[in-house]
Amino acid sequence: MDTTPTTSTPTAGTPTTDGTPTRVQAHYENVKKLGHWTTGRRFEVRARRGMAVLDLRSPRIPDGDIEIEVDLDHSMVKLLVPQDARIDHWDLRYTGRGRVKDWTGENGDGRAIRVTGEVRHGEIRVHRGGVATLSAMLSREFVQDVRRARREGATPTVADPAYEG
Image 1 (cartoon, rainbow, N blue to C red):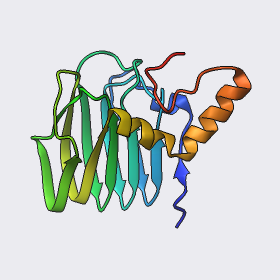
Image 2: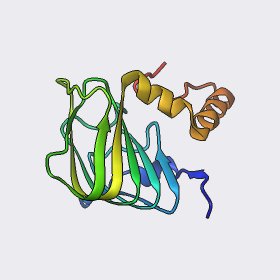
Image 3: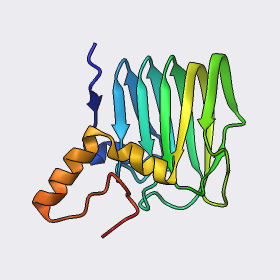
Image 4: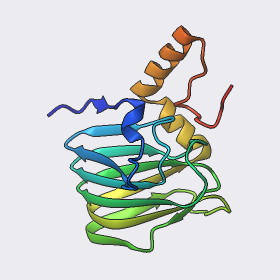
């Protein structure tokens, strides 16, 4: 079983024109979607014994609520969100052990992120603000982004997608 993180091209997260949600699948693997990877507001995440990281801090995501439908089985989803985001997981169903870990637990006045679906023996971790930045920086994708930015004379976007240099 290969446990190395995988990423896709930036266009892989672009929503389709017919309004279907952006799909993220992590079956027995780690999938990280960091930086400016999408412009959609609706997501479907399916994971079985894997891990998915979704960076939802990009200013390229249009205003309005973000909807995430999850189907997790012995898996973990990490959401990187702005400090003032509101996390709504009222409609989330748990089978067996499952939970939403939001260390601050403080919802702000910012964008609402609604999580629905089912968690079977898994968890959803919410990283806000500086913790989200550190979480993104401690990844192989960050190193690749810094090297790309240096070659192109651009600004890295994985650490903080809102910073446009």
